[in-house]
Length: 600
Image (cartoon, rainbow, N blue to C red; front, side, top):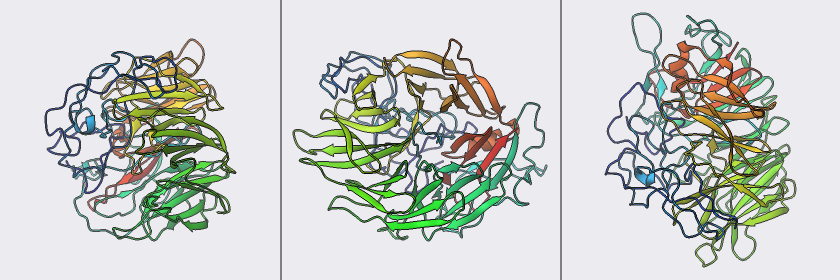
């Protein structure tokens, strides 16, 4: 199975087991992998270097080549290769971690589906694929997360003589667009026309409701984001936004239609349930992702709209990055940003070039905080990144933290508290650093482990909000260890020391990923297997015992369907588990699922 045209691959939380790997495919090794990996992490903020395990760069890959011809990775020094200096001049440690086998862009080639997501370095969060395609985007205030689509599969029916529909992973090569349609399941909300609850076992949750996806072009279409309110589960798909009752799946409002495909969304909603979606200016090759539309999730009404203007010569609105903090919407271009009042659409301020040559390049928002990352002195002897916190309402800089030349702020694992992921392309090194509320360096992760939060491709130069499967509270960072087909662990890491506080093993022979922290417990999602549906579990965040407690057991009868959602968006709210696709296949052969809800 190959990737669809012009779509970068996405590993999600891995790939299905039910089919063997096919030839080619983006991420399939074309040449023998280069030995080694990238070097030991270094300290980015001037403190003594401490060896760390953990993920390598989830950074931003170059423009993807045609799917069947990924470039071979150049030879790299082995993982643990000693570095000279970290991003703040601290001496780097000696070898640490364990060797990788890099494939294209340094990602480790793996058997089966779920080719590496092709970050520039091996071991990156999201690089080693798991078994499933399910990926998490958590609607928590801890971190704003966004996934970009890739390989597309569809749930199709297979005549087996018994009248039941069998989920089968398929992909359409038909580039002919088809008309957009409503994803309402036959019979309306709350019905079960496919008998998905038939044969449900004792202790298993029910499928509360499910909806089929709207029609999409044969080459596929994005279905970004999912927002859960007290009444509705709201989902964007291709050129529409849908809203369904959280308990019964009946339409709450809409669907809302847009003249062109939706290309970006706010990963979070505002406190008063407002979101903004961006859609393309046209259908041609020169179209830009620069049309903004505000939506009230409570009423389904379209509010204000705006066009994002281009900036200077190299400051394009070809793609935009949307971040929400309080009532502020920040729209990031390639070298600047514009802030709006998310309720009224009133322009608040612009963030553009400052200092000698510093240009804002990326934003992350959440819980009243707005983080700006800038590139300074590009091409010069003093080229470096800077991290700033802005007052969301005014744009005033609260603090600035320079980063040493050669190091790039690639992701935010959390905004509050601030946890950033840095990479060094020249040294093939990485670093996870945490900050105090006033922007001072707090700690770096010092756990000898290979972690695997999932970080997808970034259309922009970098995508600060592009990781999932990681959570944090005021004192602790929660990261999943890497596992492709067996139980993994979640490691709780002290933000004060960077050392592990405790570990919790997945209760099934499947990987487990953090969702959010609530009520003194970590809530996590365990992926489905062939003989069991996925689970939602809780783990005490404090105390001496950190065993998992099952909150919800999804039914075995829908495990394959749960596993087939591509780049899935997952949320847990009020005892219900929601899963939706992040990418539509566009297949005319079947109606793939757009969204499903589980509960007791």
